[in-house]
Length: 267
Image 1: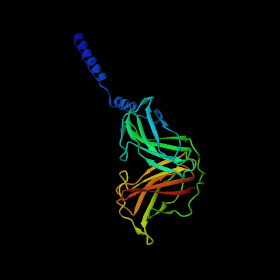
Image 2 (image 1 turned 45 degrees about the vertical axis):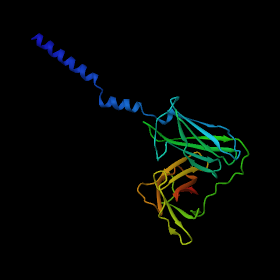
Image 3 (image 1 turned 180 degrees about the vertical axis):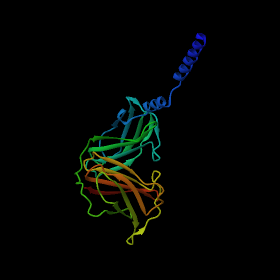
Image 4 (image 1 turned 90 degrees about the vertical axis):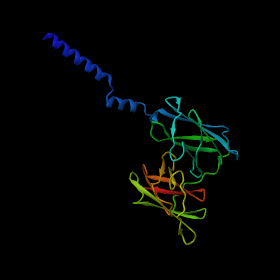
């Protein structure tokens, strides 16, 4: 009898040992999560080759690291590995460009700064095994500064740019902390004929960038899917708090990207 009991204990011990060698679903989940790239570990270093607003282009070099090591794996996000937004301190200058990836976490692109002063630079990218993230920095460009332009709230949310009339409406209405729909209505001519030949821009009907008056709050807004080619373009967003914001809507037609700015006050 004692021999049989001993055999049973041995079999049970072997089974427990085998089970302990197999990772459980919970353990695999913990390992997977521990390998994910989180925003707090990601740093961006900004360099300007000449650092001078001289009427010619300057090379912007962006170096992305994760836990101090170069990040070398990025996913294509809206047709690009990295979106770079450059905005002057007074929000009068805006450029949305796409640097070339050079490897080892380094991106480069030429940009002509219109004047010396502070510029808000924002890099949007999505690391492989990580979420989309935005990294912002104030970068000072040497050279003569331009006369500052006051950020004035628009009385009418309708602009004419490159022959197109673009009107902005907000549904159900401007209010901080609530999900809203930004609706851009695009027409042309004095008769305001609907524009129905907008072309896809970076994989959608358009893009929208929003920045607070002080440059501290930033939203990169993407369009709702399957919207066709105009005349309306819908974007969902949420203003984080009350204040004055500048909104840049970007649309492509006949191969050219048109940028339309609006300034709104969010109660």
